[in-house]
Image (tube, rainbow, N blue to C red):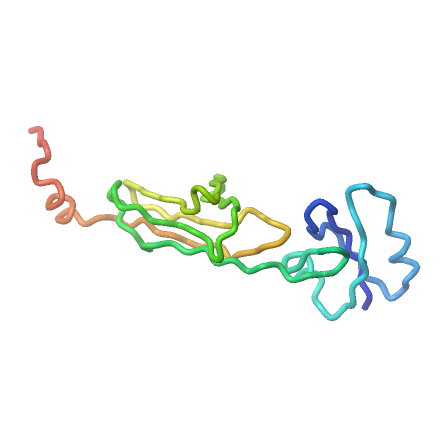
Length: 160
């Protein structure tokens, strides 16, 4: 079934979708808007995937670039010292959301370093981009066994 897509002229993000077998109904949805454009699309793709997997470039519906969020090491020890390096590939300057907190990856600083001194789970996701998408990643900081902690710090002060 024919669809009409509304997209942001600034970045091509698809922000609206109408589906109808009556062309005049689709045409009636188009309004004069300096910030948005419209493009018709064939109905071979599920509407939800158009919103999540595509964007518009020069009036053409285009698949988003697929990025991969990676973390090394994962899991990592929650010892307050070990760093887990998080990046995206292929690299693209972007913002990652770590438990909802934005962390920018830039050409100058393309890797995020996470440490933890308590066991916990981090949810890392790509802040929505018009031209790219990535599956979220779960990273775990695991408890350090007591024996390993005392071996790492044999000179620790002990109060009795």
